[in-house]
Figure 1 (cartoon, rainbow, N blue to C red):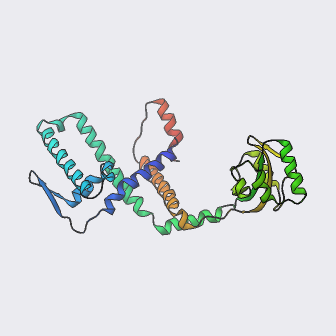
Figure 2: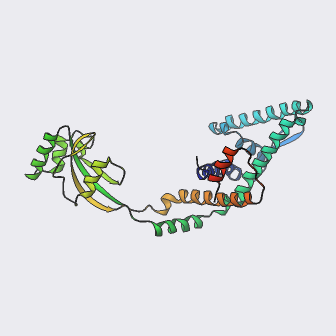
Figure 3: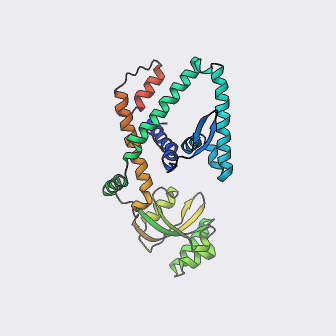
Amino acid sequence: MSYLKFAAGVATAVALTLSPLTSNAQDSDALIAKIDGVEIKQSDFDLFQTLDQSFAQLQGEQKRLAVLSAIIDVKSLAKKAEAEKFADGDDFKKRMQLLRERTLHNAYFQKKVITSVTEEDAKARFDKELAAATPEVEVRARHILVKTLEEAKAVITQLDEGTDFVELAKEKSTGPSGPNGGDLGFFGSGQMVPEFETAAFALEAGAYTKEPVKTQFGFHVIKLEEKRDRPFPKFEEVSDNMRQVLLRERYLELVKTARAEVEIEILDEGLKTAYEQNAPK
């Protein structure tokens, strides 16, 4: 996996992880319970839910009871662990340091990246991509699929004599599009097997192949209905994608800057090579 794909995954995962922290904010931080005199408020309740995705599968009072029970269990066992000096162990301290750093990473990402990407930013990026894009040609075609070369040639003869392509497809084609007059809808480059695609794109609108086209599926007679530039999507259809692109880019830039400010020494030669090849440039 490339560093870019890795970072994209991190960005998406962090965004999904942190979003409940902002969306569950309460106008009134109600007191829910007390455990050994420690108050458990609605904000504590909401935060705890974000730490375990299994709660998302529950609803209503069942969910609230499960969260409360989990909080009580955690605090009860944590008290016993404290009494037995679990927190003094080196392994525990390392884990706590890692959790602290990861939480700081997520909070920094939330503030510096997630909240910085606006709808206007996403629209501007969309407009930039649209201006630089080259329209892709796509075609709408019909076909009649038969098993043998002789059958395909017979179909072409009937078409030459004036038989309607749609009706002939309904009668003769063995493909799943046969009942629909052989209509395959619009498709672009790379969506059909090479032999079929080459023949279809070479036709003019309204023309059909004068020689059968052989593929692994059988023999085709292809008619081109229409050729056009593929319509570009509307911003509303891809706004989430544009936002994710910006999140990835800003995350990478943030990481690149941060890494330049710390001393990194990788002693494992294999990892060092891989890191240098995949680190953000």
